[in-house]
Image 1 (cartoon, rainbow, N blue to C red):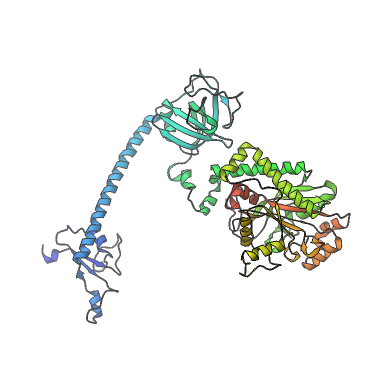
Image 2: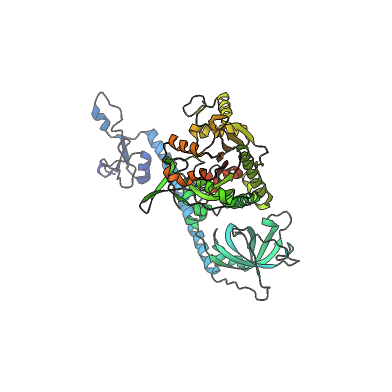
Amino acid sequence: MAASEQKVVYIDEDVGKDEPSVAGTEEAPYKTLAYAFQHHPPTTPGIQYLTRKSQTGPVEDGNEASRLEWKPATKSAMKKANSLWEQAKKKAAKAEQLALREKEEAEKRRQVLEEAKKVVIKEDPSLPKPVRIRLDETNPNIVQLGSPDGSKKGTRVRVLGRVHRLRPQKDVIFITLYDGYGYLQCILTGDLTRTYDAMTLTLETSMAIHGEMREVPPKQHAPNNRELHADYFTIIGKAAGDKEAITNRVAPDAEPHVLLDNRHLVLRGETASAVMKVRAAALRAFRKTFEENRLLEVTPPAMVQTQVEGGATLFQFDYYGEPAYLTQSSQLYLETCLPSLGDVFCICPSFRAEKSLTRRHLSEYTHIEAELDFITFEDLLDHLETVISRVIELLLEDPQIAKFIHDMNPDFKPPARPFKRMRYAEAIEWLREHDIPNEEGKPHEFGDDIAEAAERKMTDTINQPIFLTHFPAEIKAFYMKKDASDPRVTESVDVLMPGVGEIVGGSCRIDDYDELIAAYQRENMDPSPYYWYTDQRKYGTSPHGGYGLGLERFLAWICGRYTIRECCLYPRFTGRCTP
């Protein structure tokens, strides 16, 4: 080949680019020799590779222009590039073979599915009419189980649900349906497996299945030790598959924000649904416990014009031209109910505009609040211990709820009574003795507001429920009653649980008119908007107190959840109000 016909490829390791738009010319060089090999193979007759480092290359004899000289690639560089090129060829060949095989398999799959469309199933009219049941229905008067081998017939049933698990095998398909009540293993055989619907079945597809209920064969397992041997099915709503499959939308290792964006799909999971069922059971248990203790349920307003816990955490909005807020607590309203209704409680949402992203803070949470009339501080503590213990007792009495709790939190045990009682001053000493500093990195002093991290470390170390009592008046709300034996502190209590920290805040309330007016003045609060609250001290005052319990924190403790965001249907916190 003549010199004029020689193919020259240029590689500049500093400014070159390994991109399809680059031609490998002197004006547009490649960056690496390996890339040049892929587009201009070394097997090309007369090909030559010229390389340089135009900016970082060595300067010869002080001549800066030497950096710009093109030089033939070295033998070692050619050998290395050739090795990489060979690897790339093998990889490309393998990819080509894989693509060809996938194409062939896709064509075979298409043909099989075309044949499957011809398979039509019909319900056998000679069979007994199926009995409609929920998936958890086990009443033997309704559902009789047949023998595993079919020698003894079971009840023919109709079930409706969604595909939770799917396991196709040769000539048989195992399906686990769920309907929000329970799970049921269903078995498709024969022509049922050869239909187009069966061959394209996806997770979360809703369907109706008819068949015979049988016991599970020995040494095999299924929900409630039974399975449905199908004789007919219909698809009600087909779920998306491939890239849109639910397992891709909410993969187990997905980032937290992805799971929150798809909370509506996460709720279909076994753990999320179990937490919601424990939550519902906990609400029932609290209501039953309050009823047993003769507390009446009331429903206070969520839109208010007064504050309870401080203005910095109020959600403000325009209320027909006047400023109003979403309630932080229903406590003040509950206190007004005591004279005519006796002890009362409410289960309502509360709203705190705290820009906190900790795992135990929400902007909207379910607040279980109660107020008790004619009580002492000791009465309040005894009541709290009774309520918490009784609710746990009721939860564990329900076999299904107890199983959910054990599956999620195997180490959970009901707390022993009496609960540990520790005064704030004792907690300060404990923190000092264990070298746990305050937020400024200094030893704790009386008057410090114990931070979340220090409080949790103490609680987890002690590892039992703690009634932390008698906080300094300066760090507590204006309405809390002072301890008559030590006016520095209030008759207040935080209930702390291992792994979560505070789940309850409570106190006895100021019941003296003049003392309450002084508390308004101390906090620079205008008492006029609180006239209806202050009136309780003018018209037959009484010693009373109450508390607020965060349901999500209670559930996080019971269910062993890392964050309380898992313990509500759709969590709301700083920056999150979707979906």
